[in-house]
Amino acid sequence: MAGPEIELVRLSVRALEALVRGDLEEASAEAGAQLTDYLASEDWLWRIRLEQIASDARALDWVARAAVDRSSGNVVGHAGFHGPPDERGMVEVAYSVAPEWRRQGYATAMLASALAWASSVEQVTVVRASISPDNAASLATIRKFGFEQVGEQWDEEDGLELVYERPV
Image (tube, rainbow, N blue to C red; front, side):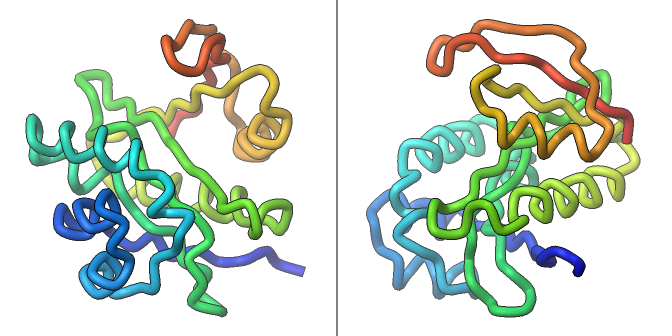
């Protein structure tokens, strides 16, 4: 049986601002999808993304997408990248599945959609993922897509992260 299929719906600045305020009605209307309390609970992330977009408008096309299950229309989380491709052509993927949708194949589907998106952009040559060594589920997910460990780093907020990359 095939897993779920995900559509990554771009979130505008207005949608992000509404999520930060907890205004799901406005955020959903702006996004064209019924956004969820889970997305509103990630207000810390949307604040970071809004600051990022304010300093580099190109980031909007890369950082904030709602993950919608194509068959049900349910918003099951969010996915995107930490920003546009760098000088090396690298983008770092980020995805999060809402707790009630975990262990149903959505992380795999979200990552597949993000990788397809990255491969459709000529400037992207490599995709990176930085993951806590304790996050067994995410480590298993990226291994399905041929990511290989290239190092590790210390993140001020998340602590030790293992760094994985794969060519597009």
